[in-house]
Image 1 (cartoon, rainbow, N blue to C red):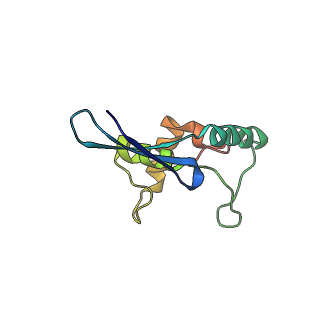
Image 2 (tube, rainbow, N blue to C red; image 1 turned 135 degrees about the vertical axis):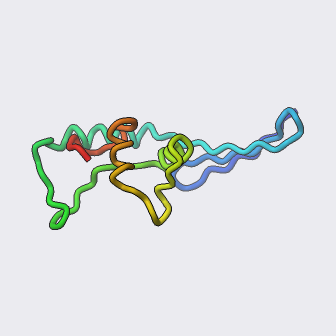
Length: 109
């Protein structure tokens, strides 16, 4: 018989612990990112692709990542974007090719 312990944290992250069939303990983190994806799509549609931003003068949001996305990038590509040493050029290329739904702009990263 499985026993579940469920906690909901800030940002809608659901933490579940349970007994596994082999007598171990299972641990799962879940997050519903549906609203985040819809917001990203809306922001992409509101942004003109021809607008050029000068990164030395203006700041412009280009991504909106959930912790689910951060963990996915770490697990699938071995890149911890929360660490201090990240090759952002490579991360942006990954997002451009594998995760375009994370972008909030139509401009190329």
